[in-house]
Length: 348
Image (cartoon, rainbow, N blue to C red):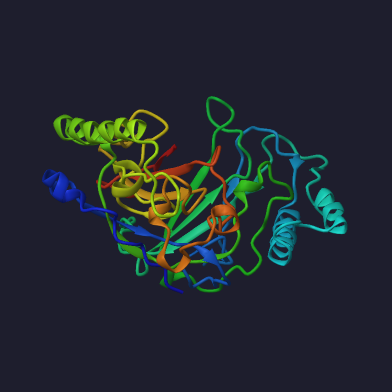
């Protein structure tokens, strides 16, 4: 499986030569449905986890006794995929709709307390051999494994995420755990990933505009403001497809690609742009991993892989079925001074 990012609509360094000094790379992971194994980098696939090592659990105090069964969530997605593939205009049959109603039902777990340990969900594992821009882990660790609690009920607000990132040496793992524990119910279907294989691709990237030097940032903003004014004055201008032509924009087309990726620069489109600092040593942190709800959308369609040109976002842009917040992205940061320090994260 190969996924290829199209060339950018224009050469942004030709417009703003100073950007050459800020150029970086990021590795787009391009997760797509498949059957990964424990020795593969994957999203939602089996993890290389030692049979004699305790599985990560959440013991933070929060309600955890009501939600949907992971198996029901997976089955619901299969039913919907088969229905839309069979009949895109009408969707599920009446019989399938009744089944979907049952699969969407929430269940209670009797007798579980608010601090009883519940298994975290293994979201992804990444081997450094596969991902050029994956930051180094502690020592000679070569495998990053990402877990999260399947409930939005953490932190000061009581609505935050709980992450657990583990680095390990893959060659130290002997017998592998074949049937890891799963929570009986989850609070949010978006925490349950579908098994996906990866097709890593390294691409050029540039920082979020809000973190560029002020003079350069203002010139970029001025160019885009001028385009917006021109569009308002020339609304009748249409491209050959009969739709209003939209010029490439720095944020959506020229700097940071959408989708799951490792390394590069974080997007700050929801909050004010800022530098994440390590909670242990105050060193500015670097982007380790972005977990995105969508591989592309209407605003970032120029990044849609060449092999998938023409496919609509519905059904094709959400292969992992992971949803972060309100269709946002999770940026996870690591300390470059000491990869063993606590990770940071931001939802955008």
